[in-house]
Image 1 (cartoon, rainbow over the protein chains, first blue to last red):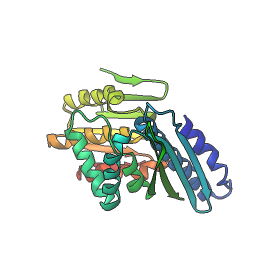
Image 2 (cartoon, rainbow over the protein chains, first blue to last red):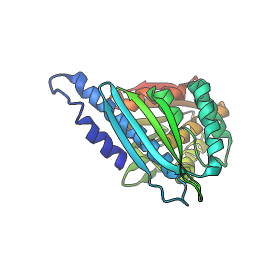
Image 3 (spheres, rainbow over the protein chains, first blue to last red):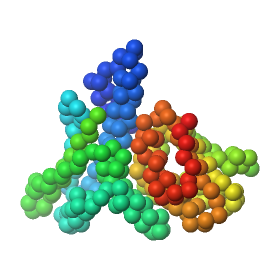
Length: 155
Length: 116
């Protein structure tokens, strides 16, 4: 799985010392977090990608001294932009852990739920990540809009 | 009656003697439709009406958010019956367990959570 590969590769930059168990634990934690976040971002990119455009999905990982910044870019249908931006606004202005429980309760009550809508929320609640988004119009006529989702994970 | 789901990436099995559902491996199915057989499996366990159901996640190395949703939904359903107790077993050596399993207790305050 590509997320696991990214996580494995990244942990080579956080070397572990066989004599110091805390470095082994830290490496395992980083690997687990990177794997989870990369997987969720890639799943989202593939789900929400605008099939009618040929804009590629791209993932970038940036290593910092205290963490990792993920950027995933995908195209998004122009009709979906407003709804997505409204969701982003909700994410940024609500208490994530409350929103998380609300969403779980709502999903449990809704038989027709097709998307859990939990990926970004769990990054906030379980991984205390910071999120950011960039929207760009990459082409007019036909309109192609790209969104880049950025996640900052401190390790 | 042995109940199990066996795939290359994950195995799920139910032990009726202890009313324990064990999850082993890595679960990253793409959404509710792909998780339907697992949701159905859990419903069959609940239908047997044990006094207490234990979810043994000690060997669940990876779970994506859609999977968290499925397990959470099951826990909510059990909570709403108000008849069946729930326990979840995690592992001390799997990082995401410490981060994410406590949320199950927020959904169902009486849920027993232990890290083995």
